[in-house]
Image 1 (spheres, protein in one colour):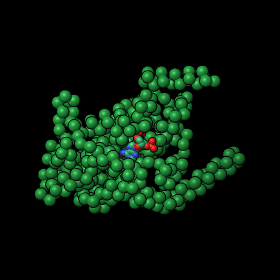
Image 2: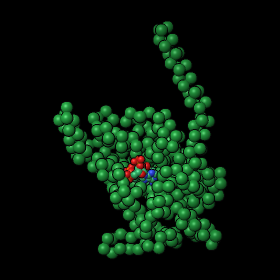
Image 3: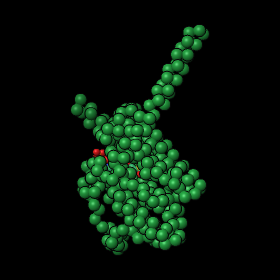
Length: 319
Ligand code: FAQ
């Protein structure tokens, strides 16, 4: 039995090493399945909760054009959540269980969505920095070893790129605006920079999941590798926006060929992850209320499906 199991594991790893995708009905180690359910469901929850900070500005967007783009973006995030819940379902967990895990506070979602959006410039900063960080992390996930997750990420990444552009364009306009608009821009970047850096997860030395996820090619880069790429890209883009990143320690390191950056406040990160961020309670209350308010839709859909089924049975009896 032991031998059989280890040979199954060896075959599984050989497939991964040969870049052959793992599909839902293939054999996989239990821990691989659990890791994917954990990551994909947390990712799905992040997309759904991530609609809330921006949704706050749909009715306040400064023009019809901005409102249409923001509305489309928020709807895209809902779509991403749905693809991801579907991808997780292929691993044997049902959607109601995932929702229950979110609503009970058992499941995590990205720390970034527990910060408030207090000005219009925040919508630009989310597009530039939050979607920018999401793309950096998610483009490699298009090559994830699990087929349904990898395929879902291709479309997600295309849409995230549009989101990043619309955010950058909002900020670029503000950067060419009045002194007050420029101050709004700088203030938003000051507040969103460090939480965006935290999106990549704890430093590699404190990341319990990275080693196995790299071996199984779920993750292609470590948290710190992706964070470094993000800093290098943003530093250059900040020059175009004429904005300063709120980190006095950022400087070019000739030897490493990268920008060095300052210490991240990991105490703040873990506080937010544990539920003590500025908006954690508000976000979960809103999601729970949406679930309760939607009960009649679920009941109506079930009643309709049952009615259709009964009619089908009756018709087949007549025939
Ligand atoms: N927030 O060992 P690691 C978006 C947890 S989508 C909260 O390094 P792993 C789109 C982690 O779960 C943004 N918790 O874990 C959008 C683990 O806890 P666990 C979401 C975090 O999985 C844009 C523990 O810490 N993206 O932005 C965070 O190997 C705009 C130890 O960490 C994804 O989910 C965090 N930031 O690496 C929507 C991408 N970081 O589960 C609206 C897919 C870590 O053991 C508007 N996920 N933790 O109890 C991933 O790539 C990975 O799961 C990482 C974490 C990199 C997030």
